[in-house]
Image (cartoon, rainbow, N blue to C red; front, side, top):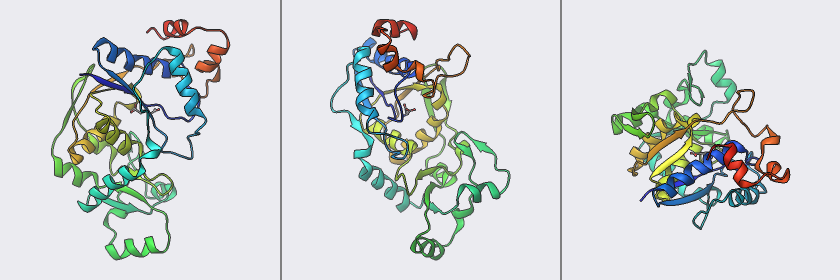
Length: 273
Ligand code: GLU
């Protein structure tokens, strides 16, 4: 049974790009007489606004999407992400990193990975006593995955993309990725991987901008012994200027289109679904 999902972050109103993504996932479930789920990815409480969640639900229902209940809200599951982090820590695969962005920039010209500059590893080798001392002094820290150790533990990995075929996982491209921060006690990578497994998602459909993120998700699946879904990374819609649609393009929000008298069928036609 195919299980797909749409997983928006409530950081703004949905736009045509989201409509395309949500309809793509919904159509894949419908075509296979499968199930369609919705998840609200609201872990980043600095950027997410609770008020956007009801408008997201309104927009999706207006588009004609039907999803199963309950809707999973990530902010209600911080304890699950915490215990997953504890598991990695117990295996010695996680370490506290006290570096600020400035410290990382000052460490020299680090090569860039999909999430930004690769972490030079400064805090990986701190002694236990230094870690304790810094924690006790109240210094803020992030939790980073020791990527090389994690790769050694699970060995080579593959994942399958419906367009790209078999893909060799390259989590090393990310280096020691951040899995939690003081102000955000889990990361997108950790929460999305655990939730797709917990919700029984068998086909992850999302934009091609997240294609590379799948490398790190595949590593996390192996570390937590989770089932591996199939993937489809769809192209991103672009505006008339050729730029990818983003939340800043306010005229393109589904709400504004609806208020201008556009019908759901017209929006579906606009995105070609
Ligand atoms: N929450 C992410 C976003 O709004 C999507 C995550 C995913 O589909 O894996 O960009």
